[in-house]
Each structure stands twice: as structure tokens, then as C-alpha cells.
Image 1 (spheres, helix red, strand yellow):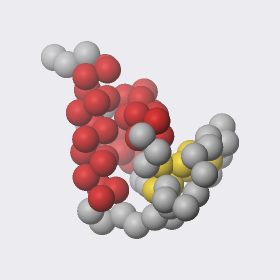
Image 2: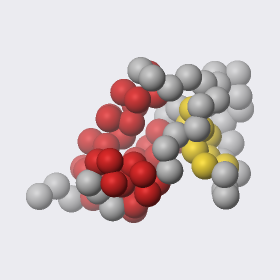
Image 3: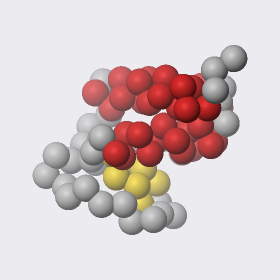
Image 4: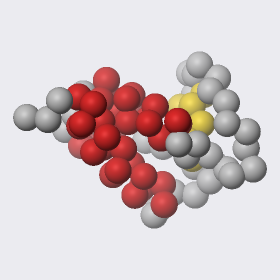
Amino acid sequence: MLNQPRLAAALAVELRKMITGDLKPGDRMPSEKDLADQFGVSRNTVRESLLILWDEGLVVRKWGVGTFVRDSEQPITQSM
């Protein structure tokens, strides 16, 4: 079984595909719960994956609102 950091990295690859495929800048990502259910992982793994994408500047996280695909014009900040 994969440990959480490796699983989070693998999930980040799948989420990156979503971002570069169907989602556009400004689009809201599915909720942590929905992503956990969709990929059969824990919400902690989803959070770690989203943090990887945030570190890469691909998403913006807004506390209480959700995670959004970052517009390249948007400053990289995390309002959590």
C-alpha cells in the first residue's frame, strides 16, 4: 500500500490532469469530500494533494469557499 505522501503525489498528478483538461482558470475544484469519494482516498490525502498544487501555483484556496484553478494573472496567496 502506498503511504500518504506518495498517494498524495499520485493524486496531485490526476488533479493536475483535471486542471489542464476540463477546468478553466477561475473554475472551482470539486469539494474535498467529492474528490475523496471520487478517488477512494481520505480527505487528508486530498488536502495534501491540493497543497502540492497550491505550492506549484496551480490553485488558489479560499477558506470557507473552496479551491479554484488559479488564473495566471492572479497573485499566489492562500487565504486560509
